[in-house]
Amino acid sequence: MSLNARSFVFDAGVVSLYYAGVQAVKPYFERVFYGKSRGFISEVNLAEFYYKTSERKGVETAEVWYLQLRRSRLRVVAPNESITRQAALWKVKKKELSLADCFALATSEAKSGPLLTTDSTIKAASGKGAVHFDVPA
Image (tube, rainbow, N blue to C red; front, side, top):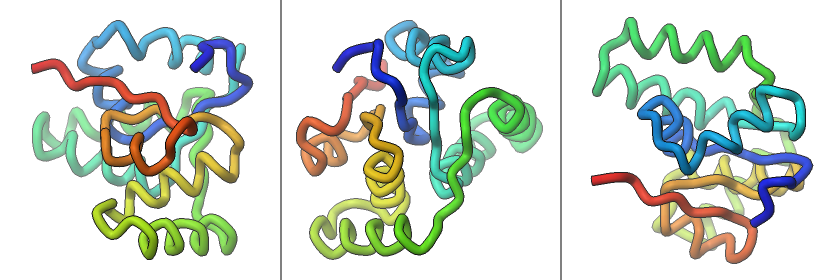
């Protein structure tokens, strides 16, 4: 997947990698933060990032990172009729996916950008529509 894509959709896991300092995801965020590409995250996936960060790092850290993302060039996409329906259809087809995963896929389709994910199940479901990043041990 080309780093020069016009837009990217981020799942919660990739955002966590960014804050963990994983270099493989940094160029994607830099392209968005510097206005070279558009970046999107589903409101549902942002909630997932917040609660998982709260569990691992505490609510204070989650709040700071959440506000940084909200104030960045990363656009938060609220579910609408079309995205909600598409997420539900993903869930019908791929029962092994979480509902948050389905919203990430539906947002990726709505925004016509590759989904950046740490979830191999999402990658398999989407085929060529996702870029998978391994979580460091």
